[in-house]
Image (tube, rainbow, N blue to C red; front, side, top):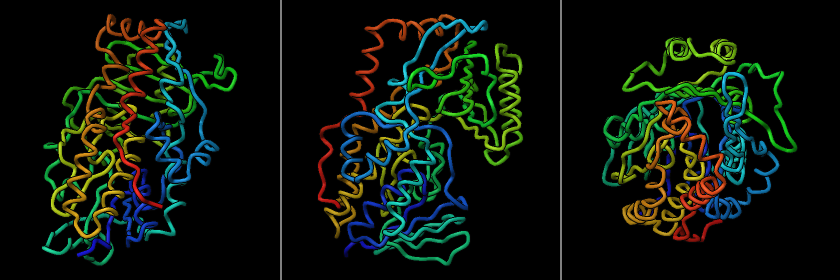
Length: 392
């Protein structure tokens, strides 16, 4: 039986990218999104390397993304007197192109909205697989049957939970939490731009890191949290958690913390890493952070675009056989996903000791080590084994 009806859960990056590919290549696509509307702004994300560029060129999106890019932002790591200890260059942080997550999501949505049906303010609550489809129950909408279901709904994926099993079986807590928040950072007396680059300022104490200004986020906080558990639906308790973690930190953190705690846009979560080796089961598949996450690891957005392209290409090439398509998808995504599973951004941004902070800073004051890091990130992001599919 030909695969025609596809349900995608999630309308951030991977979901609209997959909807664009499938909808433009003859599939009947529905995208369901829990939020009432696309989220604007948000943290800056980036793409890097030849593979990401080729996929965006194939989609016809590169020039449009360039028109919305934030520009590279250097991170100046400083001490309590604002003395610069190291500079993490914008080319390392922002890749080849950096753009606000909300801007990228809106661009992908505009290029897919005529090729897919979007349902906002709803979510999948149950999946029942049969021999010829998946019966899907929604929180608001009537139940429907689809040929396959794709979870593009992030690290806390509902599709993964319903189709694969509990989150703790597939997601590893890396022992850190992070928070991004709006609010004005107290940087009026510091240089915030130079040439065409923005400048953000980072400050460390062991196990904690605060980044103020720049385009990644108005404020970014990273801190050691062990196996701490919290209610992801209780924002007030999350704000209290951030306040407890940074309440005794000096420099400019008290003012930045106060702004973050009262900001309307606030998000906190743990740093996690996927432990999955297969991204499909039955008639369900995962793409993006739902299947291969490593929070703040630097490859998530590009990997979501790669995964959407590969899954669409395999489904189009094996239209009558989802098992063959899924097997090829798993095989081709094994190497890129392995790169995403390496490293812990928490250890990098918020080393546990003063010695660890000095060692991290030394990487960016040594030209040879810095060039090696740039080469490694480009190598991890590039996979010349990804085929060129016959997609429009």
